[in-house]
Length: 337
Image (cartoon, rainbow, N blue to C red; front, side, top):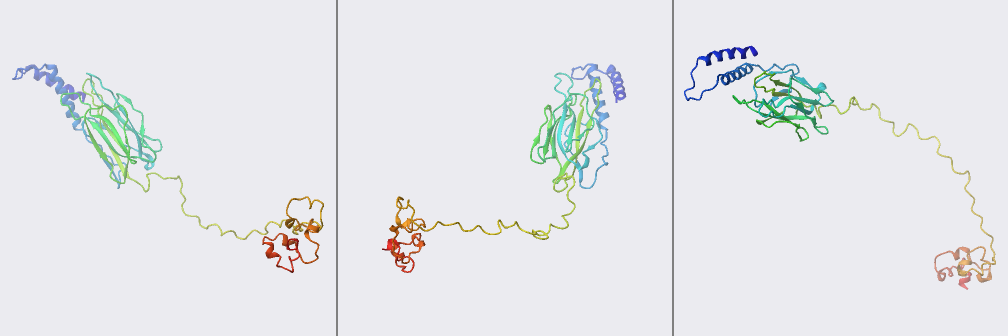
């Protein structure tokens, strides 16, 4: 390309050295005209650059998408792909800020981050600095992108690619910082059921004293999304269900339950002998209650008749008017006298 520029420069110098001023009287200097022809030579040299043939991983269910909308200069770099069918999940861009009255290049390169941590790179321009990486959240992955690119400016300062943003499967747009604002946006998306897995870029090398554009565009590689996600949820899922379920509930029950607490039940508690304790007369409770107690039921207040009066009569909740009618069991109790 340098040889082409030199050749056009020599031709221009010879031609303009013998040419007359323009008919309208606005004379251009020889140096201005030479610069214009050098730029035209650059356009002619780069316009002939063919796109690369990308066949290394192309297969059924995969395709390339492009949101290129501006620069036509440069050379396509090698394509790179996320390993193991992992998707792209993050991006960063390399941008040169505004040069004031100098030569602007804007965006110089882009890198993509794969799930698993691999970085994808292609051809890069030499100017500018890298933005922080921005990533899809959760299980999101890249499915689309937009490029802000400036179309050729004729005799003006060309910048080509200015900025990139990417779209995640979970509905979020990611905006790397530092992009420039010249040009217009163009959108490209993987078809439904596909995700971004690779890319390559087109970059114009340094033009010496000419107009530099650096990054001119990228193409993104889309691939069919494996169901249900583009990566396995576990490293080694179970190949088949368990052959034999656990026996129901066990082969044999427990041989012997816990031994009985005691060989013989505890004997019934010993009840006091029947009598009339000295405190019975001092106790303030009714004799109808106290006479039901062994220790008080022989007191004179409980009656001296030898007739039937079972002790349970004093504890039964029924009224004495009823119990006293039980002549064989309660009829001779004290309340019935």
